Image (cartoon, rainbow, N blue to C red; front, side, top):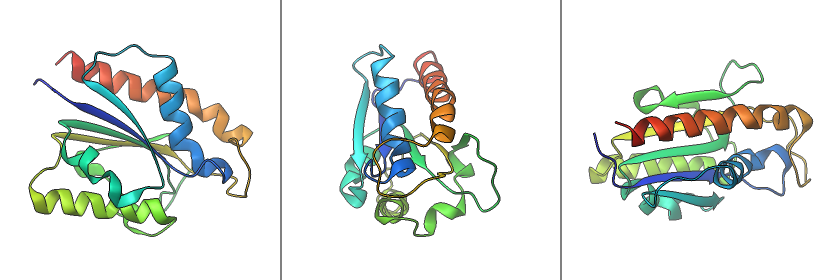
Length: 157
């Protein structure tokens, strides 16, 4: 299967510590990778529904974000397509609700990507503070490597 457009989104607010995990993962992947022009990196911050076109226009999407599963350990979680969990529909922050809405609207429009993957880790520190906690800094390389591996798999299909 050929993917003409792969969008990598980093979500989160870098002003609130670990809430910026998605943006940190995106930046790290972009700085340490060389992919063809079909792979696009988007710092989605907390733009929510305004990112809809980046979902609908892509053949495949990876979303990096801080996320809190219902029962969790502090580790990297990877969810693909139909595995996307229900907890993304709970409002943790303004962009989380927006992501849930984006998926629903993309489905209604019949413009869901062929592949969608969410990669994230549970935040430890959500206080006003720039930079990740030591715990999430330790998980960042694994999240980035998961993303890199998935993209390389898509490019080689």
